[in-house]
Image 1 (spheres, rainbow, N blue to C red):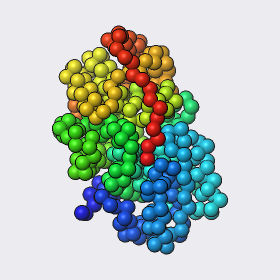
Image 2: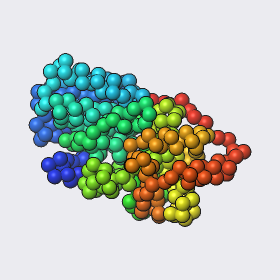
Image 3: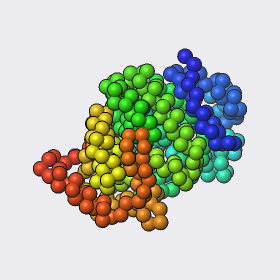
Image 4: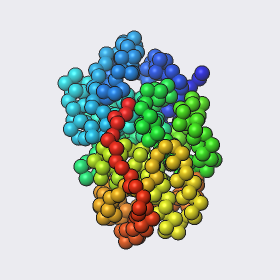
Length: 379
């Protein structure tokens, strides 16, 4: 089956997203087309490496390319300046040149780290995204956001740096643990809410098939997510305006991740809560009606995600939100649904947030609070 190609149009930084089952076994032509020569680095993690690293090394070897593997500990806690420094140390020790390629083989953490290292090594070396998780395939591998976390907030240190290509092989999702698979559905759902009501309706109908990872449904969901993100990125590469719609669910979601020390909730679980709670907050502010909130809650639940706030105090959540990179001129700027397929960006003040949070907390009194689970490291 021929690959689906989604273009990301950014003038001289334009590139292709290739989506094809079995693509990782057909990379020779792409290596030749991109002119990959000499030496290449492969950044991956300990969960992904046993599944796909050897095959990629052999593919590069057949193309006459010597590779150096950099295998990292898995999980969000690895997304630090120290880890990025380790990648740079390996590149420097092995005398990588500015023309050498770096491959990001793994999920969003690997992609962010490898992309950041590529952006700053010798002021920029080419890199290729090979995402192996649903979140990475549908979202984080596209758009050129790279970086690491700071102890006070997620993704506070980074750079906009576009890959040369994105290679998506949906078959890699077969080895993804169920918790990580379900978490990835949050980012897919986001795209329907922010830009495409028809896609949202499709997800409502096909969620049982997506939960089972049926190939056709998965391929369609990944492709449409990439198309929406590519169109948004092409219109606003550096997040000065429209691209901020991609942050829907992330204002609260990132705060919950930070408060949990990147352990109690994996990224997609936090975003799933954010999708539902930010819709509820939008309704509280009079931006949408209750039917919008209920549709979002139902699809989040159907995906197997929680839609309920953990039992952290509003003061702590607000402080975590203030440390997010989406804060502008001291204001927390959120993305709020007006209807399915249309959102509005506007700031929210602390008083409104705390009033809403108190109302939500009162509604859930007497119910069992969301219990944090120990994170299972994904591929």
